[in-house]
Length: 551
Ligand SMILES: Nc1ncnc2c1ncn2[C@@H]1O[C@H](COP(=O)(O)OP(=O)(O)OP(=O)(O)O)[C@@H](O)[C@H]1O
Image (cartoon, rainbow, N blue to C red):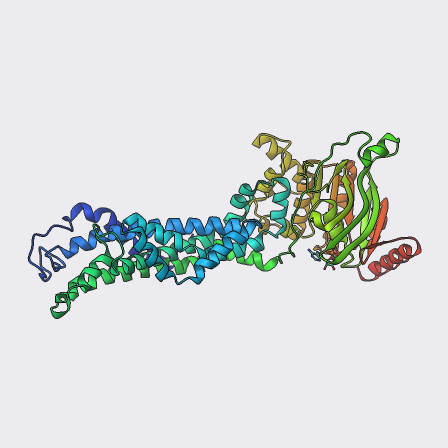
């Protein structure tokens, strides 16, 4: 990381204070020793003179650095940890959010200094009481910022994908979300340190704090509490040194913090990424459930038992409603094993909603009817789902750039989806083989998504979906964002792989000629309704014609 000049100055200045705090007390006398006259001016023996009871001001300043920085560090660690962890939890968990956010709001509306004074007065004057009071009352501001970031991040496709193949909240918070909020956490750390130093000084100055320790705030309090300080020149060596020390520490931290906010290359990279992606509307992921293919119970098995080609996807009387708005009107269809079915229709007709519903990405309460993939019921009154997503069935999201976590390498994201391979070597070999099959080299494993072109990302996403050789693949406009030539290449690649592995494909596309060319069946949606007969024929003919005319 390249340091800016202000960052270097800040670090140098702060480093000097840290060295003084660490080693100063080892080479100076005790700050409590009273062995000189009162209010002596600076001399060779007492570099900063003596205070109103004859203690060495220089020794007090050096020992005070240790206390002030120690309190600042501890307060900052507690406050930053709380901001980050509670912000992550509140942003991610709908259940915890009202509680944590409500608590943060409550603390924010109370006047903080008054609150701290009251709590500190009640808890007594110990150093740890002060640290805990400050640490426990100063987390809400940044907690809310982090919560807001997580609320937006968790709607991104790569988080949804991680939910599908890993599911564990702790893993997603630590591996997928924490890296994004790290710049905020760093900034919070530095700003907290700065305000904790100032706050400690203010509270000590007001008489709240440990009376048996020396700190810069306490030096100021001693000085201000005696009238001699101001009727002589004593204020010059009693007040100016601790005040300047506090000022310089806060300036040093401000310089470091300023650089962090503007010069952090990761933050810049993140901002570039954020500008490229638009978070989707909130659509809570709820899992369905698995029902093993028990003969005589599941619909797919009924068909198999009857000697027909079993259905890989069964949709019966499916209806999707968001609030009072109906998106999909009752619809039924089946996709036979090893076949390709295309779902076409005008923009906004409900194709993506249908695909997401089939894969179990739509909340239970919005869904009515039956959906089964390879014999597994997807929705069954909120029972936990055991259908292995990315293993039994995979889903290719519409936007490949949004589907990969921008701060993890492609290789790391492959490893996450693999459950069949146990060792790292096996995973590596399978991932490389999948990438090679989509004409990408093994070097792609170590690249970040922003280092790949749109076409490469689409191929990588197909490889990711194919790596476990799922029986069913749902692809939502897998070539939507590509130019016509690359589009055709990626499309052909997808179809060839589906055929090679005898997979079942449900394809959402606007490309009607391609759909007509490759599909065993085409479903046409219009305003959430499946159209049939002449109306369907007319739509396909018109779409085919227009596509040839305008691409
Ligand atoms: N989470 C949601 N809450 C409320 N309405 C939604 C939600 N998601 C989608 N919709 C609505 O459902 C309708 C169908 O959207 P959908 O994305 O399924 O269409 P689509 O056919 O895939 O469109 P396109 O081809 O443009 O991607 C739209 O009117 C959309 O506003």
